[in-house]
Length: 148
Image (cartoon, rainbow, N blue to C red; front, side, top):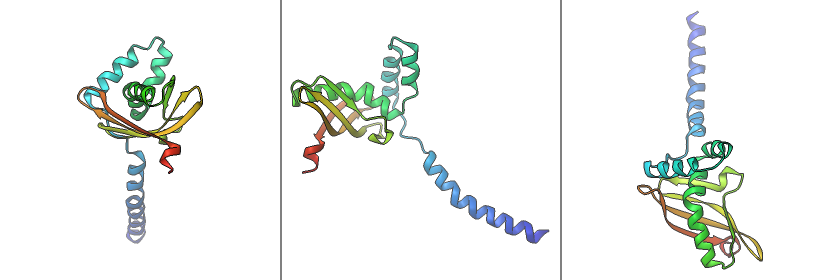
């Protein structure tokens, strides 16, 4: 009996040692929001008119929340100056990998802005002020320029 238990235990131990780190890696959450960011985002979500919109927004990833509430207004301001006639700006897509919350101080990703000439894709970095829950900087490069 002891001979069977030991090999099974050994195999199980090796399996768990190999699998648990991988499980932990895949289940790691993105960085937490700072108290200031969470406060600003919660206030914005609660100000949404419909309960269904609030419910959807509460389920967004932290990266999506930061993009929509904190960075998009700064991105819109940026593109209205850099590309006059800009009327719409989107940060990220339905693919979650297009927005990366690196920390409570930086969001990076891709987006699009629209002018009369059509849509232009860009890559961006949004610097964050975690204490105030605001964007402290926004830089972007159209994808066509980034490839040069």
